[in-house]
Length: 375
Ligand code: MG
Ligand code: ZN
Image (cartoon, rainbow, N blue to C red; front, side, top):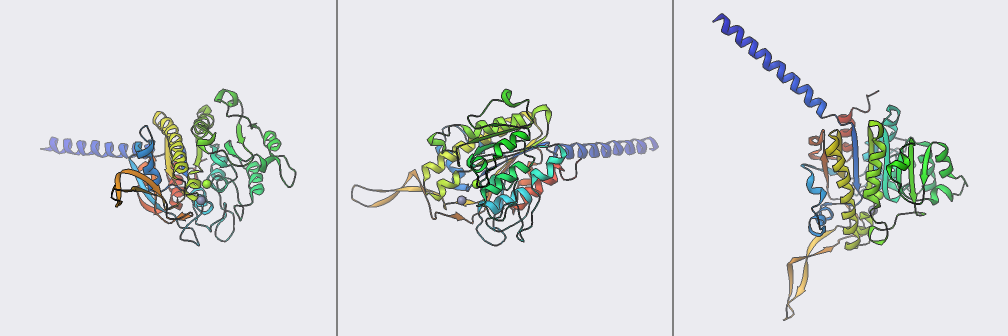
């Protein structure tokens, strides 16, 4: 009997120690080294659904197992704009529409880029709009109003960003103050290219790389932009992860929003499909790497977009809804207040299920990566 008691005690000890080891392992497993945040500006559930009907290959959105919803209202408005939306993601605070990296009381708030750069974590932003447009700007700039593009460009020079790609040369080299920020960026160690996206071999010896095309925004995907967004996403990942560095990368599909504002379903859907290819590049890397958290979400929905049935007429002239043919229709040329899907893959992805405020995206990233407290 005595022996049995000892046996039992031993067995329990082994079980307890196994359990604690397993807990430690799973905690480590939930600490991503890298985060890729992809923002489809103006992308609600119908926009995402359009990939499942109109993309010829299986949508990358379909590769996620963890899905949640965010509430997107800004500090003063039920319906947010992209500036308040991106300030929520980049800094974890609700602010007013138009705010870039400032709180509702106009004080500057620290961005992810500012928090992680001193810890030798590489950072980058990619967008199909001008790189000083509201969504990317919130990750490195602080201005009271989103329209202050030249000030936002100066904040890019002052920031510690390692990689950027997007539109907007004129805000850097044709400025009212006559500064040439492209030259200033080169002085800071940037390889700047305004002609074409390079390959990793052309930039890997630099600590920083910037690509700027077009005076303002990139062309739409269907009108000459080609595969810029997925290619820049892949290049950004290669550049930021070189020498096994940890990194944060924000990628924006900027023009999905503009298809919504224009009530142009074809524009919207081609931009959404292009964004889906960029998601694929992020997921391909994350699957191989194993330590990368990929989050896909949006600041808000645009257009009140719906995948309706097509209204047709019978030979007798009677109207009917053809359930075999989808037409994209709109209820507004502005933004809407709908809850917005969040997709997550990688270590800690389970944290992103449920319904929560848009500011939680920032707080969940910080909690999982422990970047705020790391050295
Ligand atoms: Mg945007
Ligand atoms: Zn918009």
